[in-house]
Length: 287
Image (cartoon, rainbow, N blue to C red; front, side, top):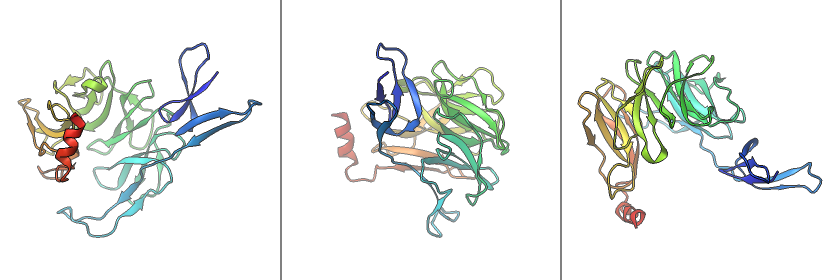
């Protein structure tokens, strides 16, 4: 069976064809070769990883100190979220050898591994409003799906999503719904489903990705590439009563990572619209 590098990892497939098999022991691997005796495998690793940092701020989101590395590890770690009471943090990490959901206390200590899928990409943990459950997504079934697990561990429970699966969950403010992204890569839409299961409800028809509910439960903020002639994500709000959408970002440059500032109706987001080259980059993307 020849080996091939695929999606920054090693896969094995029969010379006559068939279904590729992922070799999970060799993540981030490229350029595989096997020794003539067949008992040694050599490959190249090109490793780039994200890590978690903590930065003290005041209520006006002004920095009050220097950033410090949080839950340090020389592996990929990302997507942190504080528990509702601020005493714990959930995040995804490869520290066990595969991407899993972990928690720590607010100081980055007392680590606990919640999931143990041992291979499939797993991440985007989000706390329930009461702090008792964590929603996340995983490809454990072979495609992205949304799961719920107890905040102290237990067996993950998969929720019904769409024929193409679901990902990037977020709880409603009252814990009655879990919002998620469903549909194909080229046609992602926003949905919601009850934490206990049931039929998902579609919320958008012209594109939606990564949503968060406002503190009063009246709106969703989300990002979308729905505008013709604009190749970048922009930020929108969805009125959950009327279904009306409104763009809130400047419309120029790449705009992502929107969230409601805790306890307010203000929306924070990351954007390159102030970059003097944003218009040029936008035109180049469309060329």
